[in-house]
Image (cartoon, rainbow, N blue to C red):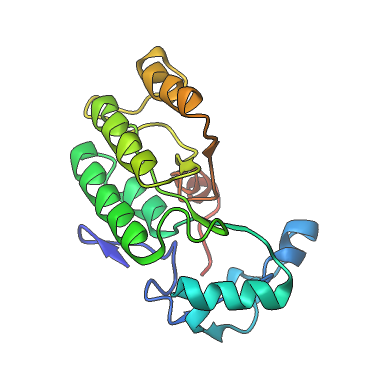
Length: 199
């Protein structure tokens, strides 16, 4: 995928027409790569099925697997946040558009069984609080914050600084957990300085 004339291979196929099979990384997370490339770790891909794009179809699959509930995390947000870290307002606009799409397509609480996780970017605390309120009004049971320094016009800073206390306080008052998920948090830049990617 290309963001602002910068190609990223963080998500190899951003159309998600072909994806890794469920559980493809289980062995990797249990035992490491064993010298395999990322492509080899993922194994043979599969074509996306309706349950990957439609909540009613997802419920059918969940029923067949005996699953009562699931939390869904969005993938593309982490890519956008890292690539646009020099323009926090643009990140906030794109993240809100993603949250709107997620709500329109999946809702944030689909039949009390599928809980989509809207993204909150903390780059502008006032806008982050507005986004949190917007998500809560639509039934969000959790929100996602990228596990990375918060981008800003004067550089990055820790999400643990006092500047962000109003956000954490609002989450506590709402009684919702803040989730984190694997993402492009920028750390690969440091790794690549020492050991460039081979694929």
